[in-house]
Image (cartoon, rainbow, N blue to C red):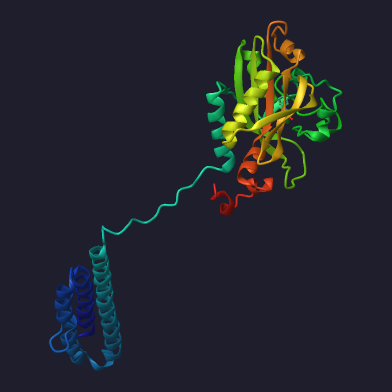
Length: 348
Ligand code: PHE
């Protein structure tokens, strides 16, 4: 036998052996293939090795080297096949161990943010009192955030330092900020009272709406302040609405939210868009808790939206949603709501 013949024999042996090992579907087939190729007595590798003796002396080193390589290739193919069959066996065993009577893996569900939960609950309560939800933009113009609410240009509430105008230029001089479509400066709304105007512009009385959403004020964050928070605005316009109606709506609202008979008290206050204006407090667990501003809608506001103040009157209120949620759950720091720490959030 010459060298080329010997090498050709090795090549086909290697190919055939890995094909058989690769095709073995179970342990018995693999063992049969092992005996055929690697068998110590009559294996084909063994008999090929015998041919080595017939190769010319000077070709022996090359022939022997290739023989050893092919031997390791075939052994490696056998080990790989063995591993493949073992892992299939393991999966089958696992499948057999599946116990359908065991309880399933627990699925961890996400949950709604406590403020979202509060908003949904407030909407439910107010729906029972006949108020439907309304919305307005968070980016507002000065007309809806101030002017129509009877807050004139020189009013301190319009100080650019107390509002988030949409450009730095506006901070020096109101009216020079980024321009809205109608050429007016824009700001992040500082109160949901803007929605009163937006709704009344589009509808005729009677009006009975609430609006829940984000408002923005450049306050430094501490336990009770955050530059963004949520308010619930309420507005009711009809004929012969009085402050007694305001007080009873707030009392029914507070009683529903806190689940006990709650007394409401009014303290005189001032808002440009209500006259008279009050701060409303509720009595709960032996304490008076401030829950927001309210009052009878100022005739100037009614006129701004084209309502006749001789015919229609109404009340409005604005409550801080974080504050309500904090009171009810005993949360002491408003910043907890916005840290996104699941240890806090998962408690609600
Ligand atoms: N908009 C007022 C505030 O943000 C609250 C308010 C709303 C007062 C409606 C009176 C009537 O403080």
